Image (cartoon, rainbow, N blue to C red):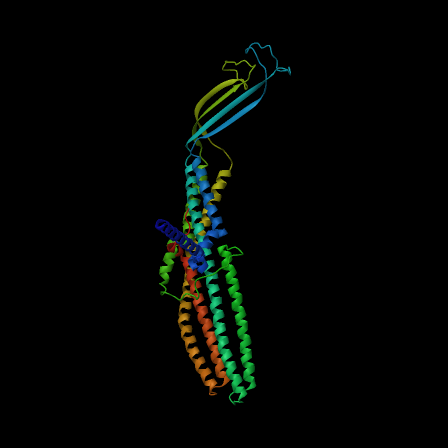
Length: 465
């Protein structure tokens, strides 16, 4: 009896443990994930880079460049050309002096089979193969830098949409806050009108409603901006129609550290900018193609072997070396040789074309050397301007808020005119809006500076083969 009780108790404990385990598994499975809590900016960027059709297209350029390199390198290896034939042949018995068969009788047919092959191994080509292989190798570097460039552009686009979404949301909050202040002013105005206070009039009510109408317009603008940024971010991330996008950040990020010198950013751009890598590798590739075009003027030396085997039942094999039978033979051999092409101006024209293509890229490189620093400077100055505006409008909207609170308090006691209140609310709304816009401009300028200097490549390696 005691054993049965103990056994039943153990069974109950086991069942309870199983139930608790299943409950734990269910809680774990239904626990909110990081995505459910909202995407961080880095998570948005990572997802966008994986989805981006532009980045995936650029990666295929890398694969194409690798294939071209492999093709160029394969020209160093021997090539084998073979031919196999099967078909009808005239019967031919006897020897080179006499045969009982003729080639005009239609019933004197048999079947023949033949296989022949030739192998050629280049031994010296004056650099034709090596130059093109080196050009293709440099082309791979050009394509890889192209992937990095597309990644940088995608990162900027994601940041623009992400910060735009945040600006729209905090902008709506600011509009709603100002609407609250206008509502307080409206309540005070209604009470003062009710007691026939001499500090207010019916005109003040019209002015207030005019301010409220204009404020509603700004709320509509912020809603539109938020909606556009939301859809742009979803599109960049490749989210499906049924997937809702939530982001973790609730406000625009403030500057964390001061900007470095302009010279630092220009130097960084010269070191990291993918366009500079593309141009450097591209110049190498173009020069190698010029060298290859020059080498095409010279012959190519090779060694090779050849052989052929053919047989046809009903045809006598003739062993006389001076007589050749297409349908019944065995022969082979090896040789060294030289291959060359003579033309009247074609190769020289191709050299000129390759030189012009090289010079064109040199001009592009000169343009980049002059203009990329200007691009960096523009983003840098815009970031500095926005940084200063943040400080200026932070103080401006803080002081205008104090002014607005004091004006509302005096207005409530009938000690301030309506215009004082309206001006204070309007100034607070404008300064607060300019403050938020300055933060947005700073973050966008910083994102552009990050792209124009190539600094994003230091932050994280997004592309791995």
